[in-house]
Image (cartoon, rainbow, N blue to C red; front, side, top):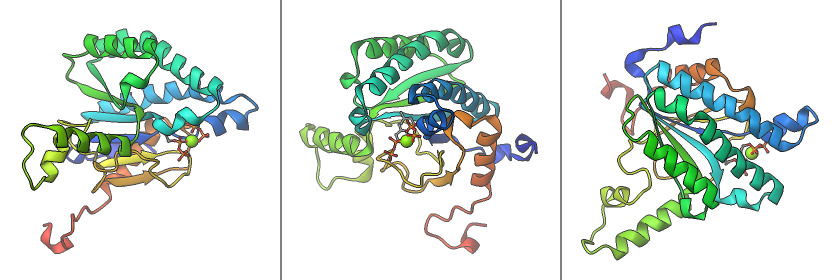
Length: 242
Ligand code: IPE
Ligand code: IPE
Ligand code: MG
C-alpha cells in the first residue's frame, strides 16, 4: 500500500519525535553483536529523515542516547559514541546540501570530546538551513532537563513568583521548538523511558513492533497516518471541535 498518497498534507505534524529502539534485539536475532544493529540503525535515521522531509515535517527529534544508557557495557557505549562521530562526519555534506539543520538536546558536556567537536561542527555547518530541523537527543533525559530548568529558573535574576508554565518552558532544552504532535516508539515497548516528559503532555503516541533497523520510509508514513486518524480533543468534547 502506498501510505504517502493517503497522507493529508494539511494535517502534517510539525514535530515528530522518535524513540529509536530495538537495535540490539535486531542484531542478536541474526547472531550478531549489538553494535551491528546500531550500525544498521543509521540507515533508518536516513529513511525517516527523508520521509519527514517529503511530507513537510519541520522538526524531527531522535532519542539517540539516554543518560541511563551509560549503564550499558563499556564496549557498547564506546561503539555508540564512535558511531555518532563517524555518522556525523560521513553525512554532514549531504545533510547540509539537503537543507537539514542539526541541533542537539541533552547534557552535551558529558559526551566524549570527539563527539562534542563533531556535533559543534555539524551544528555550525548547518545553522542556516531551513528545510527540516534534525534534533538529536544525546545524553538526554527528561528528568535531567526539568531539574536543570528549575535550577536555572531559581538562579535567574528575573525570577518572579508565581512561576508559570511559560517560564519553565523558557529553560527547557527544546526552547523555541513546538511540542511534538506525534511520538513514535519502535520495538514493541510501550514506555517513554525518560524522554520529553514535559513536551509530550498532549502528544499522540504510535507504537510499532518493528525493530528500529527495519523501520523504513513506509513505516514513517504509516505512523503519520495513524496520527491523522486520531481526534485530538485537548480536554474538550468532540462537538466543540467542529
Ligand atoms: C536502541 O536500541 C538504541 C539505543 C538505546 C542507543 P537498543 O540498543 O535499546 O536495542 P534493544 O532494545 O536492546 O533491542
Ligand atoms: C530508550 O531506549 C533510549 C533510546 C532510544 C536512546 P532504551 O532501550 O534505553 O530504553 P529502556 O531501557 O528499554 O526503557
Ligand atoms: Mg532498547
